[in-house]
Figure 1: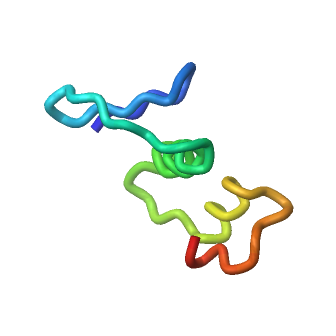
Figure 2 (figure 1 turned 180 degrees about the vertical axis):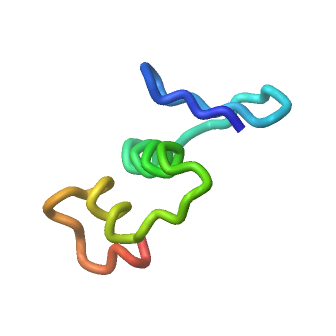
Amino acid sequence: MLVGLLGPVMVEAADGTRVSVGGPRVRALLGLLALEAGRVVPMARLVDGVWGEDPPAGTGNA
């Protein structure tokens, strides 16, 4: 899988097929995970990266 983060967010499957990426929060989450490829990312880091200082209640289920 190839993830492009500079410029428009772009994802390609191993066979070169482009994969549709959701809205801004999904793109932010994808970017955070791509930058930490192969490593476990703590939920607190993901919540902070997606929602910043004002996360909604129940982010663990979001």
